[in-house]
Length: 320
Length: 258
Image 1 (cartoon, chains in turn yellow, cyan):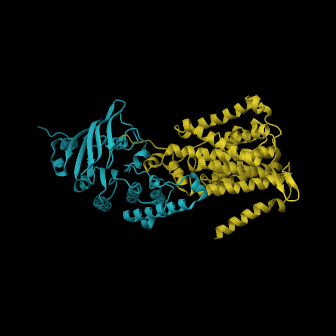
Image 2 (cartoon, chains in turn cyan, purple):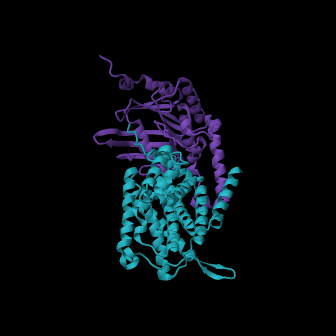
Image 3 (cartoon, one colour):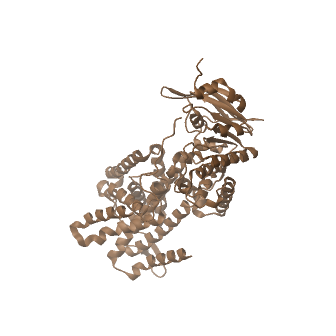
């Protein structure tokens, strides 16, 4: 009951924020941080619940962004339709990447996914004919809504409508993640993370569920990508670099692996911290790095986490 | 009694080491079979080959109540689906999960809820979840862990972890249970209560293949005992005959000077 009240207050506060503080810069920073929260929620399914260390997550974000961008530029798909194929394509890539790759484990998987992330970015950079190469896609349409009395209203460049779009999406995605994590599928993911052999001998089809986790995580990033493309209007390959993958991973780890609240809190913190530190000018990133170290030193399992990164790796089968 | 598990000429090599050398054995329905042998005799390798954890080099594994089906080449979860569940010698639990969740995980092959029904929280999914919960609680009661259902499994004392592993395996509703040294590391009291638990399972008609070092555990409950030594089967018969078998005594104690 108390939890319900707390959540409701939190949600209402989040929705009222642009009204309480209409500073466009603040709203924009928060919008970006919440977009990170969507990504962190998706990566949390892969790394936090299922325990697959993924270092190329930005690739799914890119695939979603480019899918919506291309559909919009070539066939004029509106955002409200285009986000779905964007999410599905990214999810499909998650599964397609997983199929050959998930037989490798732990650190090796991390290296392979890192390669995947780079390949996707480099492919978008070099497929000039379709993706505009390093210049990216220009002129992607913003979402438009029909308002009574005003007709079709373009979201435009103001951050406020995107803030609401991203905040509501974060809520929906978080809700889905909570349900999933408490379901038969979510339990099986955690079982795989804890002990793969025991999980398979308890009847869990490990490979299939790992693919499912990659697919779900990929689809969430794809959805985030579509929103990102619609907000920016322009996407270039260097928005989806390795640093982004690492930052999202840091958000998940900082919040606590496997924790849904943690993913959101981690994303909000790491998403806003560099902006909060702007006053320190050239020392900004130094302090940012330092504060990450301090947080991990004080809370090695993250804010809400029950597990440290790298623990619970598969042990080998006794051969007697 | 009808045949439940039939293993023929099962062979597994690790490099130059022959862990299993043309081993043939069978388990009938309702039977408790003890599998004994010195360390390194190939007992756990046999379990791993039967349960899809390892792939044998050659040999047959046939399993089934009414019609028999080959288990060779099946993945571990497919073996469980067909009614063959196991426990591990070095207990393997999901350390962050609660006791109850472990047993619910065990019902995985007997439940169906997928991504969509979980996301939409359909009535079907909720009913199934309740069913799995009830079944898991029932099994925890059966193994005497119902009072600790909400504890984190990692906090359980050793003896209870073994019981939890058995409950998890039972949740898959197996027709044959493979227990890998269930009494290892237990104190005499715990051993006694484990024996009682196995006796209960026996009364319910469950078939069990049991690896065990402790003769006081194997001999009284087994209908039949099979002895492995250096990957070969050296004896197969009722417990009292096994205890008197000179080959078995030699394998365990060495050859008497003549």
